[in-house]
Amino acid sequence: MVTRAERNATNPDLGVLSARLLFAAQRELFTKLVTQGFDDLHPRHGVVLAYLDPDGLRATELARLSGQAKQAIGLLIDELEALGYVFRKPDPGDRRAKLVCPTERGLDQMRTADRIMASMQDRHARRVGREAYAEFKRVFMDVAEHQRRTVAAD
Image (cartoon, rainbow, N blue to C red; front, side, top):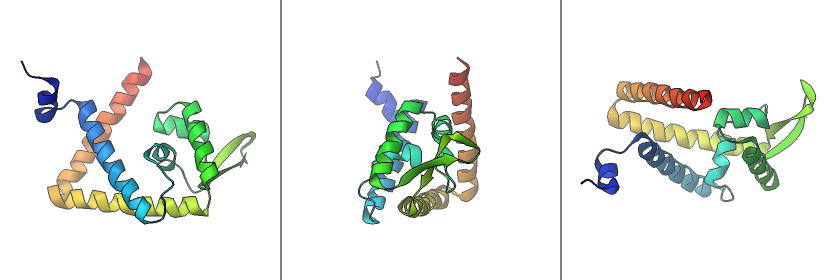
């Protein structure tokens, strides 16, 4: 009988493979962010920072985009606010709602993270070929969105 460890080594399922990619990408990103002066961030903060726009977004929208619970996003926003990466301001479209906006430090982090991620993607595209990498991303996005829709429908 094949053990789970053996199966995961030779034929990992979608969850294992996705986790390997996520954790390796996060490790590289946050290690490089530390060298660029962002040593107070942790991978958990990426849930907010990956989706944040320069003009700001509502917490509910950040939760929807990331697929995380609104309460979890709220706690992460609190942490990022205390660290000086974001601030809240009234939403001009609905004064009862708040926008989560990046500070100057937050914008600097976003630009730095974008450069690091672009470099990672470029490295992989050069390694496997630009067309193959573009097709991989297209299929991976389709699988990820189909999975999200399937879970949302249940």
